[in-house]
Amino acid sequence: MYRNYKRIFYIGSFFILSLILGFSNLFSLPKEAIPKAANKITVEKIKTSLSINLPKQSNKPTKSLGLVEKSNDQAFFKEIKIKYGQGLMDALLDSGAYRVDAFNAVNSLKDHFDARKIQVGQKINLYYSSDGSIDRLEMQKDFDNLIIVQGKQKNYSSVNISLPSQVITRHVFGQIDDSLFLAAQRKGLPQIIIANLISIFSYDVDFQREIRKGDQFEIVYERKLSKDGRSVQEGNILFAKLTLSGKEISLFRHTPTESGIVGYFHEDGQSSKRALMKTPIEGARLSSYYGNRNHPVLGYNRMHKGIDFSAPTGTPIMAAGDGVVERASWYGSFGNYVRIRHNGTYKTIYAHMSKYGRGIKKGVRVQQGQIIGYVGATGRVTGRHLHYEVHMNGTQVNPLTLKIPSGIKLNGEEFQRFRAVIENKNQIIMEIKSNILLTRALN
Ligand SMILES: [Zn+2]
Image 1: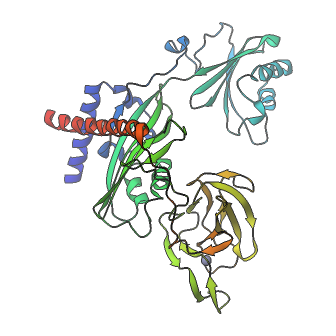
Image 2: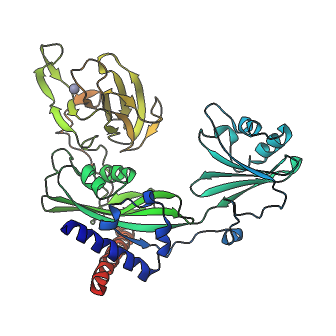
Image 3: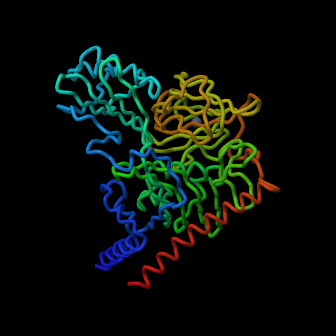
């Protein structure tokens, strides 16, 4: 009963707050745009400073998806979807287009889109004239871009239109009862944001040993909404804080002018990034230490030159540091195996994986925190786990006792700029919190 009452109170507050701020368009969103739980725990704030480069036409959208005026001679419309093994040209022909039209329409796309890279499932709106020729083709290339092809026969031309969107800032906080992942999920944080959150803290926090019941997390991140409210894209984490056993660790997003490489920094200007992460996996239990042990399969005593993490099959494994993939293939008793060369000194090894991360193969450059594979039980194993090794100058070392070099530290003018970033983030959080108080006062 009380819970329900509380829920209604929060939803009510959220509604009134939205009315005050004039964000009624938030309510035109489909259900999945804002997770159910979000009503209770987040306050959304539209970033007013955002400037979007909109073409003039976008202010008067026509009835179709398109933002460009249509001709009057549009006899019929078809929505097609690229099927497996189908090219754009085939799809147009299958939908009934004349060969010359299809050819010229695809040809005119060149400036904005490489038709060879079309993806399965890509939707295309086709408008035909009464004589059966293609009058217009619309294709949403990605979240921000719509391509429109228009014309007749040999005179097809295409334009790329930036779709209007707005960025809202979401603030979520919660208590951890089991794992950060589950706690964040219960609070309605989308998976991709949770993965980023874990990744940015992975240099400071040993997720399988340092998380206690009652610890807390707080996050401010961006979400992009299309103007029609139909699509959502999660954006960057601006600020995140973990309170572990009473100790606070805050990270702020900042791009140092000199390097131009965005990163996360502690309040004192120390970057969160290090040469290697403490743990390349979250929510896992350390099941076997570095050193002598009885080999579980071979039965004799032998040196275990890595550490094992027990985790459910499919748990993502992250690259412990920036580097180049030296090997990503089956390797005898190691099963599916990845080896990353981080620099002249360090390499890391990940074994027994169920599958490889997207695009992970020999020679590919990976970033710290990038998913390189998933926990499995391939090779000579008794059960699913990640076998992880760190090699220093060609020999295995104990990852748990390794002294990890720290990253960069901001100072001088750069530190002053960073302090301004912190001020700005604190301002956002303060505003959100005072809005909550204002809403309560009104109630
Ligand atoms: Zn092992």
